[in-house]
Image (cartoon, rainbow, N blue to C red; front, side):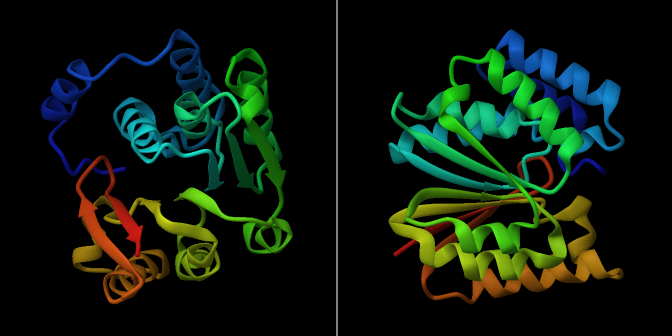
Length: 211
């Protein structure tokens, strides 16, 4: 992943952000050692950002599309109250197994429920409303995920979407994924049901607050 923010600036930001737990750090090490695309991990800075959003919302119910090895799941669960719940969806059994292993070692793991299978199908089986939805799955389906998830967000709730800058390629999209992300960004910007801000955090994060 091409850096949008200079490495030294990002490092400075991390040094002035509360440190990640030893368990999360261990998860990062294993992710880099045993997965093909470890850069998919949200990482320290974005993870801390997500946790603060959970706390600011006083969220009790979160939906996540794209578990990977579970860093974002665990750090958002840290921000939930003891009776909070996070449902996370993914299609990869190997990376999900890593996530489950670390979930089992965390005091916050009891708040997390794993769903394995295509998210578009899984979403049909999930009921109720959410305070926050974090979308970080396959990019070509971002608009489909958006349209399925937005009705499930309570009024005043938040959708958070990762990788909306895709290493800057949205400025000149060429392949299918780049065009899909650019189309999604325009779709969200023109959606009158939400108030939107796009931030250059890591690979780009959009926050959409539902009216």
